[in-house]
Image (cartoon, rainbow, N blue to C red; front, side, top):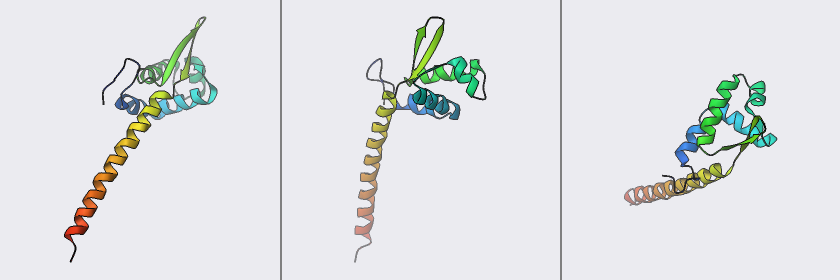
Length: 114
């Protein structure tokens, strides 16, 4: 699937961003607390602020976080929309596979008949 608009991320971008457990934890913290700085995130994770910044960059590329400057600080907030779109895409894919598997099952049962 490709991007249809500038703001809409492809499912593979979202899935790649969520593949790392540290990025999932960062996203969970942002969703739970409504936002944080890279410094405050680093204080609660076993990685440096620079590593947090790199993870935030990946999450930002996937559209899962947004950055807002507040004076000298940059605050990050979770954006659930790309995750919702990816979930809908996965649901559609699962439905297609279920139809295919049912077709194979019906063909197999028909061939094994009397």
